[in-house]
Length: 165
Image (cartoon, rainbow, N blue to C red; front, side):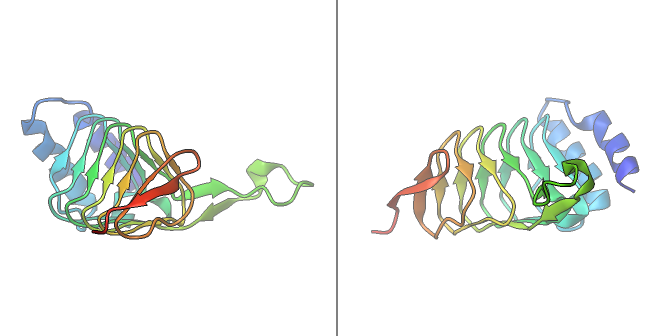
C-alpha cells in the first residue's frame, strides 16, 4: 500500500500552482481519511499518511516532511513553515555489541495541539507534544514537550517566555 501511495503522490508532490494543493490533498485522502486540511504546498512529503491526523485550517509549507511511522496528530489551525521535519522514529543503538542497523527502531508519536506556529527548518523529534497556542522559533530542534502558550526556540529547544497574559 505504501508503494502505491508513493507512486501516485510522486506525480503531484512538486506541482506548484494553487490548484495542485487540492490534487495533492485528494491523493493523500485516498490513503488517509484523517487529514482535513487541503493547504499542502509543493514538495511536502507525508510518509505513512494512514498514521497521520491533521485538523482543519492547517498549513504545511513547501519541503515539509511528516514521518507518520510512529503516529502524528496535528490539531486545528496549525501553521507549519517551510522545511520542517516531524520525525517519529529513530534507530535503537543501546547495545554496543550489535550493529546499529540490526537493533531496530524506537518509535513514539508526535502531537501538535491547536493553534501552533512552527518556524522554518525546525526538527520535531519522536515522543514530543507541543501545547496549544505555542510558537516554535525557526531552526529549533524540539526534543521535549512544550507546554501550552509557550514561545520556545533553540538547539535544543527551550522555553523563552510564555504567551499567557
